[in-house]
Structures are given as C-alpha cells and as structure tokens.
Length: 230
Image (tube, rainbow, N blue to C red):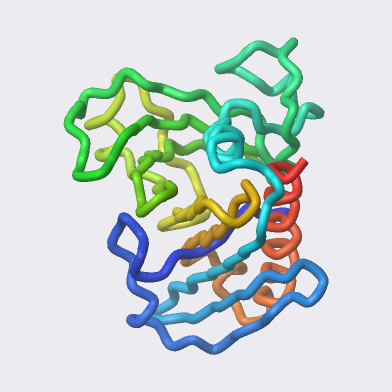
C-alpha cells in the first residue's frame, strides 16, 4: 500500500481540526525522522505526518522545486497518461503518480493578504486503481520566507476554479498540506512540511492498518524531501 498522504493541524488553509478526533496513535519514525499522528471519530480516521530538516540550498531554489508539481510522476506509468505527453520524463519520482498538470488560468482571480500566487494541479494517480482529483495551491509570503498550502477540492470547488476539472475520485475525504520554506544560516533553507488526510475507507480507517500507513507515509515524506535536497 504505497500511499502519499500526510496531515495538517490548525495551520491548514482548510477546515480540518484534529481536536475533533480522539488521537489513538502517535509514532516517530527513527529511520526517516518523521512525526506521525492518527485518530478516529464516527468511522472517519485522520493521518498526519510532519517532517522538518535543513536543506543546503537557497530559499528561492527550494521554492521552485517544491512548486514543480508537474515534474513529479512515476515514469513507469507514462503509457497511462491522458493529460500530458507520454514522451516527457519526470525529473522527480513519485511512486503512485501518473501525471500532474498545472492550471494557472483560474476563474477566481483575487488573492488573499500576503498571497502571491495561486494555481490548480490536476492529478491522476494509480494505486490498485485509478484516482483523480484537483489540488488548490496557494503561495504566501511568510515572514522572511514562504508558506505554501495545498488542498484537495471537491467537485463543486473545482468547478468554481477551473473550466475542465477532473472528477474527484479518491479514497480520501480530505487531503492537504502546508510547507514552510524559511531562510537559515549560511544561505541554507529550513524546510517543514505537514500533510493531512482523512478517510472513511473500510480498510484505511481500521486500527490494523495504521502501522503500515505510517510506514509508507514516513518513507514518502522523506523521499520527497530527498528529491528537493538533491
């Protein structure tokens, strides 16, 4: 079960409050240095993972790599692509991702305070089945660095932002993340990423699945950071 999933606390741009859940699992992956939480309420389980590290690159370079969502995929799935060229080779690997396409022409033009950029990412992924969804990405100036929020939209939200959205077909009810990209000493960057999801999937919401989910989540979070670091 290779699942790219992480979780957010109250710092998220969308309304998901883990205080509404009874947290029954806490774990720190020593191998990947990732802190994780999970809890359940009324048949819905949330998962959360946070990773933080210093990257030996300047802030602007790290920001550019983080925002290169359309350059992440599993090249082994290139024949499954329908939105992008099958000949394109993604420089950044993502196990379950078939393709991602960035849409900058949005129906909603107005930006929030300190927000400098907003766009939608249409995603198609494969994990024992095809999944499609649209993520709303917002980039904010935050102190002397940047904050990036990511939120999976429902069909109504997607249609309010772009003309031809993908239908939301996901095992997750909610999914999103927050990146903090802050300058550090000697031209380096302090990178912190928290990702949140919740699900009522009959298997993913079970206690017996938490350990496996945590293991895959920690591995994927560290893999993404290593991609940026390289």
